Image (tube, rainbow, N blue to C red):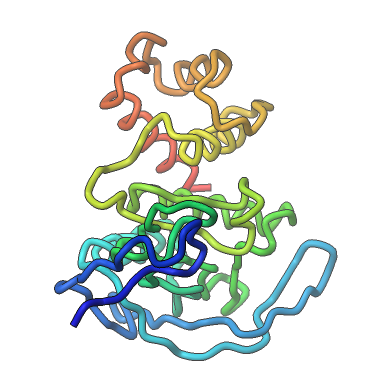
Length: 246
């Protein structure tokens, strides 16, 4: 049976056919960590939100996404964040990128939206969710989560974009790897550089002269070397590992 046509968010509904995905997984957990779908949030202070209701869900995605999520869980454990649940806003869903006739990576089972995590800290169990990115204390934790996601997924879209301030969109770029110079990568690199080096780079998402200079200072690599995508990706990996440590 045909999967049908894509209609949601498409510029021309019905123009594109949803792909068949024979390897699609349907799982309730990854590495023993369950998925939960928040159904109600409450704003407790000006910038902090909490989840007040949720339900257990199964998620559908390609095996590569499952591997990335397992790596994410392991990386969080390595930095002292042992998580008890992954809060999600969904995974496989055949639709277009909003206002285009291009299928979203969600259509291929290549993406998952991560709202946040429940984890065990020194003060007991707590949840950290993307909604609270404006709170300085929560932002410190979200930065570490963000960095760990970026070490596992090719693409992460986060709170720097107005349409992703309540979740992290994570995908594997359908096997294409990280686009080192992409805006969604560089904007978080600028945040990480500001944190690690004490700078005040604006979050432009552009690999401009100031950002290259900061990456050079961080890595010891020349600006010419940083124009090489392989080298740049290695530097970004090290930067994100440093940001993940806090």
